[in-house]
Amino acid sequence: MREETPPAADLFSKFDPLIAERQALLDTGVRDPFAIVMDKVLSPTLAVIQGKETILLGTYNYMGMTFDPDVIAAGKKALDEFGSGTTGSRVLNGTYQGHKECEEALKAFYGTKHAMVFSTGYQANLGLMSTLAGKDDYIILDADSHASIYDGCALGSANIVRFRHNSVEDLDKRLGRLPATGGRLVVLEGVYSMLGDIAPLKEMVAVAKKHGAMIVVDEAHGMGFFGPNGRGVFEEAGVEADVDFVVGTFSKSVGTVGGFVVSNHPKFEVLRLVCRPYVFTASLPPSVVATAATSIRKLMHAGAKRAHLWENSKRLHKGLRDLGFNIATPEAESAIIAVLLPDQDKTVRMWQALLEQGVYVNMARPPATPAGMYLLRCSLCAEHSSEQVGHIIDMFAAAGRATGCIA
Figure 1 (cartoon, rainbow, N blue to C red):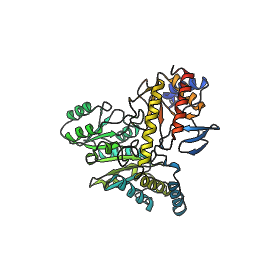
Figure 2 (figure 1 turned 60 degrees about the vertical axis):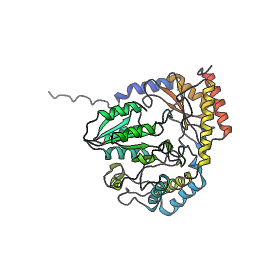
Figure 3 (figure 1 turned 45 degrees about the horizontal axis):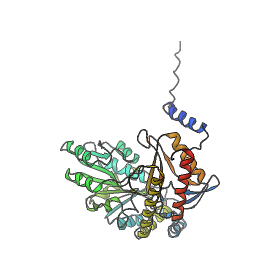
Figure 4 (figure 1 turned 60 degrees about the horizontal axis):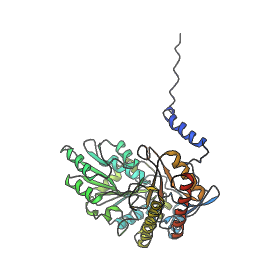
């Protein structure tokens, strides 16, 4: 008798609990927080969502460069002169004049000898982590590191060591336990994206150097906002000379898409030949690198914007705290303000109440946050007016009382 082939396992079955949880949430009548569509974007701070003009408080457009006239003009000019795309990788036909100009703008902005542009910030971390440290080396990273850092570690073959979030003492301890052989790479972030807290980079860099480690700082959420020149937290901390690599993205303060690594290491350029996420993917379209280069040059002279962004951050932080909301950071540490809530139900209802009031924020839940942590993440923009910040505080007050999140 012929044996019957057993049915193939459903590869989606592992997601059934999440599917059921999401459906139960939607069955209560709330909107899906992860399926919002911007019908029209009016400015860095305003969009039309489901037919209603809404203040944007959930984007990473920190410096408001997306509608800058010079940035837009540069993109249009490149589109006319070079077409819509490169149809090739950087190491083949995908390096245009604009890609080199963008790297020159980065070198001028950071004061470094080398700059390498990737197609996304995610790929920049993926490439650096997977390429730099080999099987006999160690990557030591903060437990709250971004997914792109973890994925870069998984793609490579280095030994991974985690230390407690923002703990200088634990970093020192972990480094001290490593064997004498093998290289070591300490990976830090200037601003951590979920809670908006900043790393004690001065102390951490000193510890890493004491143990002979090389240092990467991801400044995705610090570029444009921190330091005299807007380079990031590492500049503000005064450790520029001791940091070996800075990773960043164009999708936050620069206002477009793409990623980069800058460095002064004399052997840096070899990464263009050995870094798989750089070699084996199409390069950014000419219009994108043109907008990025123009934006980066303008950010070199954006002191007034930075000052206004700090003013917005401090005002919103104090306003929400005074209303009785639980804020993740004791003071306004960055342009990100995380409002902590007790459970998913209250978080979703508060999120929807805010949207109905006319302000969009990000909802975050596990696994994007630590287990049991639910929050609404507010990301301020240098283009938010003082009047808009006042409206945001009023809308938080109304939504918080309507949902019982505040008294």
